[in-house]
Image 1 (tube, rainbow, N blue to C red):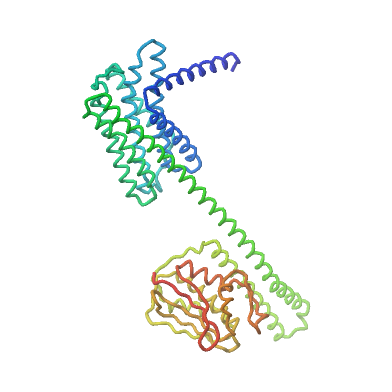
Image 2 (cartoon, one colour; image 1 turned 180 degrees about the vertical axis):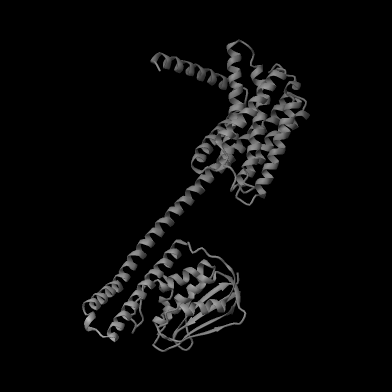
Length: 493
């Protein structure tokens, strides 16, 4: 495009902007300072809501932006443009002001409709996403068609006359303000009844309803001065409505920012925890894998000189070391799920005795006897698979820190407000100041005499994490005859 054409386009744009500014200035001369403030707040609300919608894609923000923009564009800009053209052709400003009488309440009706639709009173999941172009186009077409019809069919009375009849509401304007009052009230009620947080939206809808009431009440006064005093409340309520909507948008933006910050912090925490778990697991896996490799290499080199009993012994050593690797990998997998909160629980009524027996069958008790005492018919709304995993981890921990041959007692029964599963050992016990610490990741404190017991320090961490995901708690207590009791407390459902 040539430079001359660009200059022509810019000149036309400058002239249009200048005429529009002149029209807005003249039109605002007929309104109060509160009316000017109201338009300014609606313009700011529309801008902030539109910018926020681009990031969040929340339909409520789109509807608020479109509704507030309709008030500014159709209630202010359209009369200003008419006033500008009326000035150019030497006509009175009566046309612009008369159109404004219809354009502004029509814009308020549009805003009320948008606020009603913005209330999240129904689930939109699975529905076609709301398209910004469709919302803007529908609003513009309806308001534009209304303005055109009104401009053609309605007379243009003179302005600035002491006759109060000139300022009285005509039937069309009265119907528009009645619609604003009804829709505003309905929007406030729906916003208050919704399950989500819509207090700001309810207040804005109520303020919008109050914009219409002074105009409707003004039909009862007998003088222009009294009418103007009554209708002064309208721009005040308009400013309150715009301020509440702007506060709602800013509040939602702050909440979203806080949520994203928490999500980021949680993601960093999870990633840090996973890196730590992976590092420790890599260290724990290295030793048994090295042993497996060494035993296998020795078996290969000396295979012909070994008898069957020696070969069987080497294979048994490889099997034990491989099982240790599998146990470490399993603990890593469960610990990562606990750390990230992705266990995927499925609760259903389940027999606690059956869960305990499953845990005992999978436990690494190293030849120790495990005795079970479970109340008959005891059921609870739990995830049986993960509760069995928690009990198994507790049994493994008890077996690692109790004397050889000492039995491990598992009991399940009702407790205050729920059920209780206890795992008791005959070990040396845990000092009170150490009990909470042992439920943290990678804590490898060992009681005297058990300093060389292997372990990743994840067993009790996994146990408490699973129990807490099901709404319960895991704690350590002293046993009456010596040893330690790990108590799992869970609600019934």
